Amino acid sequence: MIVCLCNALRERECREVAAQPGTRGPGCVYRQLGCRVRCGACVSTMCEIVEHARATREAVHQSRLVTGDA
Image 1: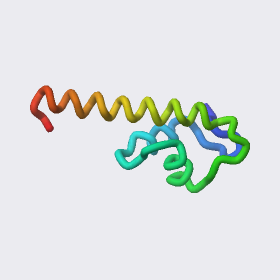
Image 2: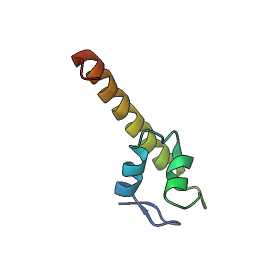
Image 3: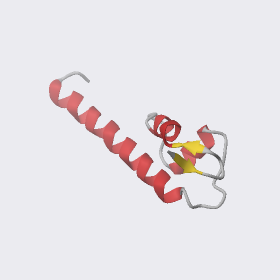
Image 4: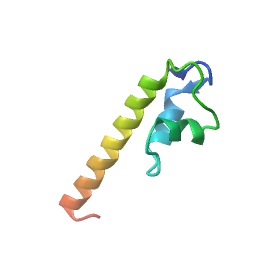
């Protein structure tokens, strides 16, 4: 699925970048992919992608703490 028409960003590549530990927000995803927000229609979707990735990283981290794999 295309997330950003202006920059031709696909969901898969956005999720891959968002999953990286250093990604703090949507702006980080755009910068890592070498582009910037243009029309803004994709920003809400990008926010959801980044939030989902952050929650997933946090859940994995908590799971490792509980199981002692940290």
